[in-house]
Length: 90
Image 1 (cartoon, helix red, strand yellow):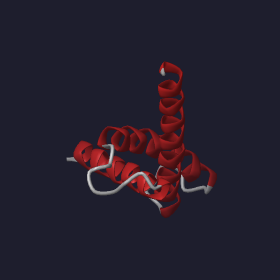
Image 2 (tube, rainbow, N blue to C red; image 1 turned 30 degrees about the vertical axis):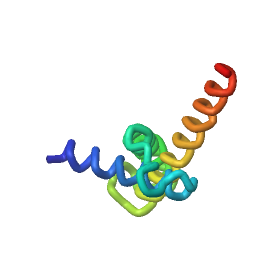
Image 3 (tube, rainbow, N blue to C red; image 1 turned 90 degrees about the horizontal axis):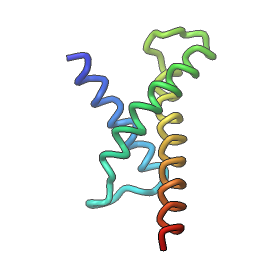
């Protein structure tokens, strides 16, 4: 049950990151990118912001905010690398 919760939270954080970046809409959400960016971003951003805020590893708002910020950074890097790769192939 915990693993399912982690996956759903990562998916939600990744979707929020795509929404903030303006990359969502009817049928345009990249769920693979949302899942990967959410999980990686949640781990990196949530852990770092939680430790900086002094919350440790507990679930606090700083960790939730850090998760979305981390997912934003991962999504931005993913899109930038994908766009560069597509341009170099043409």
